[in-house]
Amino acid sequence: MVQKLADTIRAKHYITTLIKHILSTNYVQVNDNLTTSKPIKQTIGILQRDPLSPLLFNLSTMDIIKAVRKDKVKVFIYVDEMTILSESLKVTSKKPVTI
Image (cartoon, rainbow, N blue to C red; front, side, top):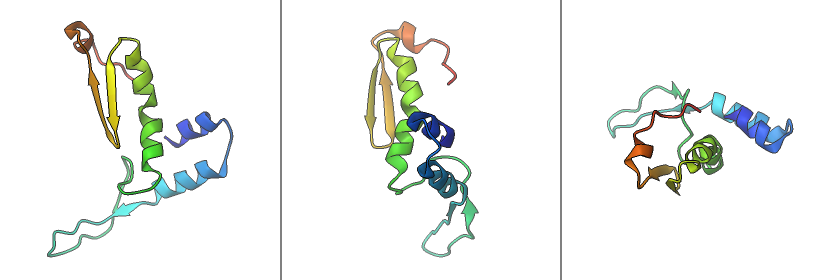
C-alpha cells in the first residue's frame, strides 16, 4: 500500500515514509470490560479510527474499481465498505480478477 501511494504521488515523499512508519509500528489491544490484552502488532488491514484510513482505503481499492468498470458494473463505496453490483449473472460469475 505504501508503494502504491509512492507511485500515485510519483515521488519519494516524506508522507510515504511517515505512513510506512505508522503502519509498521501499530499495535492494538482488546478490552472486554474485564481485562485488557497485551499489545498485539497489527500486520494487515487499515487502521481503525485513523485520519489517514480513508485515503489508504481509496488507494487500496482503486485497482478493483478500475478492473470492474470494464464489465459495466456499479460500485458503491461508503467510508470503508464497498459493494459491487451487476445486472448480468455472466459478469458476477466470472473468475475473480487478481489485482
